[in-house]
Figure 1 (spheres, rainbow, N blue to C red):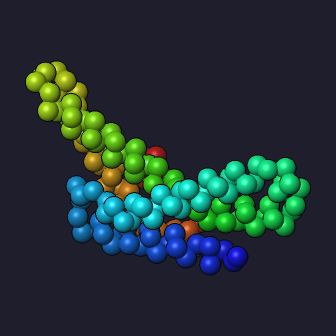
Figure 2 (figure 1 turned 180 degrees about the vertical axis):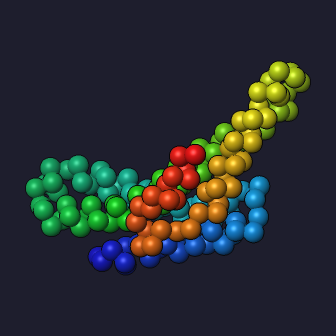
Length: 143
């Protein structure tokens, strides 16, 4: 499988993700897109497991093919993991804001602001060409 062929589904999903959120913020990612991204993450994990098998490790061509496919998916998996982490943090902060405790609400607001800012950054990322690791996009995840 060529790199372009392996990357095509990931690129299409990232493009749909970007289009969905380019003009809006504060919305939850469409469940259909999340389902597709989670399938890609599952394939990534399958590839990781397969590459750890001794018979695969002994076959250079197979290992190389699997490593290339895995590399094409890594960027999508990193973005999805960062998105889900930020969504969880935002949900936790919203829950804390609903508490009666003023001190808890005071602590929760900066957490919510940070999580929502991270979600906005992720929603506005441009997909990396060829679904390869893109330093500019990954730097946004680390902020």
